[in-house]
Length: 341
Ligand code: KDG
Image (cartoon, rainbow, N blue to C red):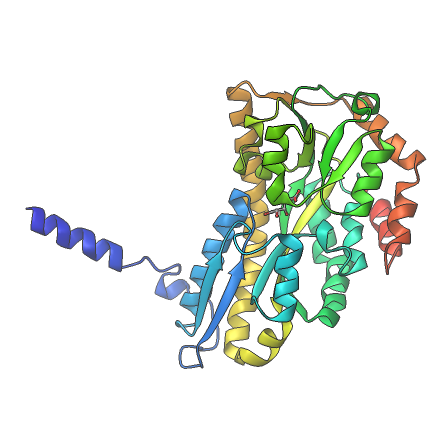
């Protein structure tokens, strides 16, 4: 009996389920006989991105008939956001992923997503990513040797603190908050009265644990995936900024190492997976909120009037003019404010 069980288990392990049933496979050119390409793929944190990366890899390897092999390094294993994209531009990595804010010094129009309260729904943000703004950024970064593959969702950012309830800007007075390494994010938190401390993501948990910073701001997917609420006491649902994840490929590899058929596979799978990840990110945010409330985490929902006070303070500080001054296409801010307010 034991031998039979061992045989059955071995069969199960080695017959890895295909992503697509034969009849459901998309109509793509056959890449199975093309020269094998190995791609080093650097991923990021958050459950929805981790799930998406696994699915993207499985689909690309299957639909390319095995002629594309992926070496996956999830959760910033190889490098932090900006370094991962620099390594991708140089060709040391094939694919890198990053929040947009750390990339603003590489390509200024990434700053568009550092404008607070630009979007009030995920759908508005997705429309910007899939519209002229996202397309224009993809065109611009080709100058840096980067090919845009996916605009994914990190999400609406929320403020967390160790032990301070924040319901108005005055509650932030001189509070040491970690921000992403981005001048506009620092300017916004200074305008609100906080004391912003720019820091790479990898250093954040220890900084909160040691009290180097009192709080930080991130989407729920990041807060939960990294157990931030183990060292934070409050999460205020400020939803003050929507941060995309961008997944980029080395342009030289995309244009000259992949065959036409392999490029078609990567394009198809990337289009499919970016849309899948955005929906999954929203599903997981709902699950996280439910879990937080069941576990009696202090989830603070600010009233519209309280949220308006944060926004007004930033408008008084001319935050949109500051963002526009940092951009190549400042008109995008006016276009998005007009479309989404
Ligand atoms: O793996 C994701 C992190 O590197 C970072 O992009 C998450 O939003 C983030 C932050 O605050 O740094």
